[in-house]
Length: 454
Image (tube, rainbow, N blue to C red; front, side, top):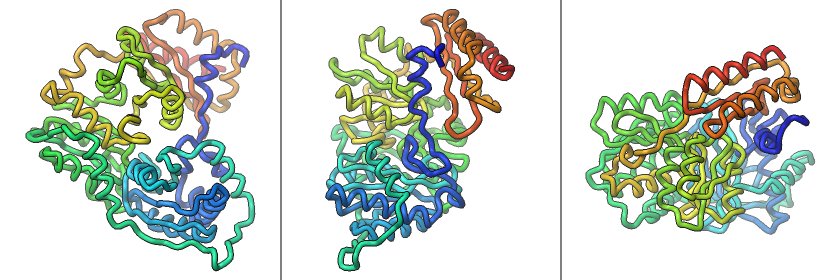
């Protein structure tokens, strides 16, 4: 590892993912329902989390979920686990992840959501939020992991928790989203929403229509197994085709749990998180900055430099973006994947709030995304997920890093190289970006060819 510069060390750090022993990853705990995320484990997870929270003097928890069929099972399993630890449980029903975050913050309670985000229905997961509506600290996650190694023992019967249901959870979240933008009038705007057959299917159409927009939807008929299936922010082709064929002004795609967003303009162009950050950055104050990730396009970084806007990169994962924002007392950050965090409006990444922020930012341009993006051109990126027998052999190879250095010197300020080993598979993720797509592709392929020979 001696050939890895400090910058590259940061690029290779923070890549915690769900491992076989069910550790917390960068976004809670996640895995297949038939193995990693099974009812017995989830029940014990509820007990372990409840036991640790009780030690902190916390006795109540909110539980929300997305639309996947296993949510029914895990809702009951978690309820049993928390109650056995002496925690009172309030069930929220189907609700976007940021909705659970908002209710945790507004009710001064911890909350969790049962969701595997953008994954298909075969997976599920758990995301935890503290009383500020932000994700649990690493220290708290480690304590829960440690408690999982202990024998599960219920409290005395007199101390068992109770369960209730918040019947107006969706309504409260809808009002929160709308109230964040008191002067946003969407009358006359035609919007097509792709709700990914997920947690936004009921909430998002009401938010935008009650603000005056003419709203149509796709991916808004969840059946428990079609979440994220050929729809949503991870599969925007259906939305693109509908926008091109129809007469909508703009398309908005959410992921299964409602914390990621992509935009499709009236020409069918897909805009990612970098495009959204470019537009939203025009609204930030002089003493603030923007947090991106290792995947943020170089062109956006150069734009911020030219505009005198402070910019820093965090590790991949909205959790790390949020940490950096809090450290710097900034408000705006995000990832190309569509996690957009606006701390001046919401305590965590919120796709509906981000969409409203975007519309508010472009309203003076007649809600034209194209006009609002004039002058911004992202660098072409070539991404290769390379399967290898031993990723570590490549990571410690002097020959490999000499090639990386050679490419970096050739690109200079007009591009960059990013190397990210997978934490769950025998993969090396290679990315080269430059002003020329052919150069990016050739250089990335040359790196891949070398890696395969090592």
